[in-house]
Length: 269
Image 1 (spheres, helix red, strand yellow):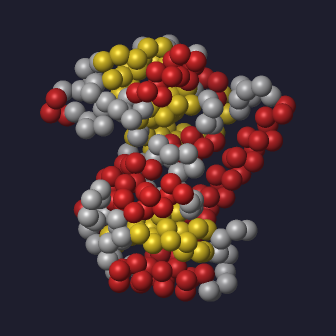
Image 2 (spheres, rainbow, N blue to C red):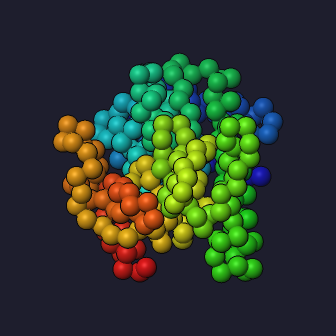
Image 3 (cartoon, one colour):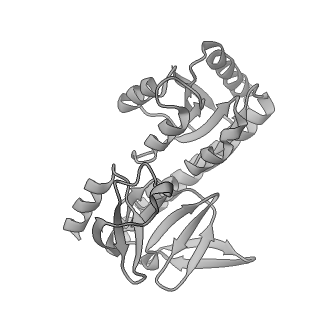
């Protein structure tokens, strides 16, 4: 098993030094966790520059930093391919809810205890293994099938196991700690993250917003649409752009960063 490649982002040199020391101490226990700190950055801007040239599996990320804060930086990563996992490490517990809204894997408060960090890193190792398994299954299925029609989204609902045919899924939408799975006739809730779903089915679903993946075949039109009142407007709403979803006649917000990609997808359908 390859080590988990970790990027530490914190504007305080002593905080970075302590985190590196904890990670290395956990690695040296010679347990199941193999870890490697591959880089450090003092700001989100520095981290973004490094990620344009390199890759990592996990970012240990502070919240309050000069320039884009940790929440803004984490949000910017969600529309990149091969999104690294995010674990926030901060002295400000009030940001916990916002952290999970940007699909953070965990949220640790300073001073970080070694046992708590180790538990979070173990969770990261499990999530990365699940991602790799999903990619392996997808690659193995490709020669035998011209699409994903034989695949299912498996979830637990009211104590029973439910399999939703992937071909019926119109969109996945983040809802607090869960993901809504929408078909033409039903809505289900499942655990997981949009980033993992995006990695698993990159050709089938299109990221239209930080909180939504839409089946490419389900997008019918893109137009300016008044979905929210001005007081509740999302700063990333793309000036009111939205897509209409086939079969359910629902409109979903499109982020300004994704408007061009949605237009291109519509031309290709």
